[in-house]
Image 1 (cartoon, rainbow, N blue to C red):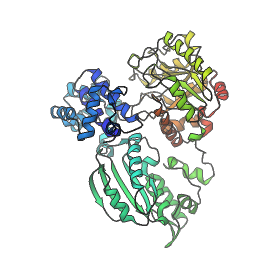
Image 2: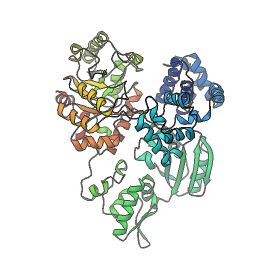
Image 3: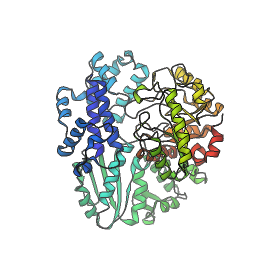
Length: 570
């Protein structure tokens, strides 16, 4: 059992307990344990095999350590199995519908007797949902649209969770005989925020050996189909995996075809037809002669185009831009000079300032902004003004001591209901930058929510708006704001929006990243890291930025501290 599988079991248990009205602290304990497991740099199963005491990990006591050991040993958790027997199966299914967390599911059950997706559909179609507190007409419309779309029969997996499975699969397939290249294609390769399934393309002279090795992967639950060059399986996690073994001469064409998107590939085929060419997963053909296919670059060149990065392959103008030589040079990890939003153990992080700073320095960063929560965020042990002032003094001392990294004095300051900031001006004035965030009252009307945030931006110390829509993928809908107005307000005031790399957030999303670029608003790419390992979440922030066509010049933390300081000056 892998960490993400154990975490998934804890998250299921937390959902069912919350629906059942269990003690909030118990629910939070399972969620914290799941979050920790997803961020652990090594497998809990390996740690147990070495005889390590998991109860010494943060958020893990003796009880949870015992449950992890039970899952590793048996593949299941008896506490969850027992709860499932007393909870209608349909209630758990409801939590997987976008926008329906456990609290909303409990309200649906208690107020309307809804206990399954079918019951929810009937309630939405009858108009009863709009009458419930916290739902409204828009939520009802979204749920109706969900049932009217193909999504209702599809379980999607967050990008970060799919990545862990993909990494294990690739590492496993590396041992296949005659394996030359492996690419995980599809929506995963395009850095989409969620993944329906994994598409794997392998170049091999012995496809049968690749198929045989793949079929023996220990996470496979069922095999839907298996041939000499292709197979479809479903893993224990529920994720579907499709694999294709191709000859080297067709590998590039297969990567283009299976990376997609469907709309992009259709546009490429139409372009090929206009040039008298046939384009498919085996190559580019003029009549029956292959003229390209071994590499993606060759495929695009045969169509008169430069190589288009996977993140842009959505048929959103990328082919026209490529034809005119106007594709952007997309921002990359090597362009990032620092992270502008991380937490420490002073609030709800795992590591101290020194450890976070040294980890940032090891990643080649020039600066790191410490952004612990303020006092209004009680659940996150937010800092009082006096505690933040002591942290400022601590950072000054560490900056004198540590070389090669500058620690920036900052805070993730709550935006209060009236738009004021949750910290006195006298303390805000001592910070290098202020990261403002909404953490409550998500259900205001778009106009009121936007006005609240703009009032916060009016404060001369305000620098960056964190996770601007406050969404949690698959758990909480984006907060309703007038995004164009918000971006214009940030431009007028000389402040910025964040593209948050936490896997459950990815906020701003790709569409809003591109909207910001088109308006001339620069963004901060940040991780919201709560441990040293989570500094690597920068790749997820970059994924959304690249999908939004962002270049290094569109991102403020591609600058040196000297230049960034000038940008932050209001």
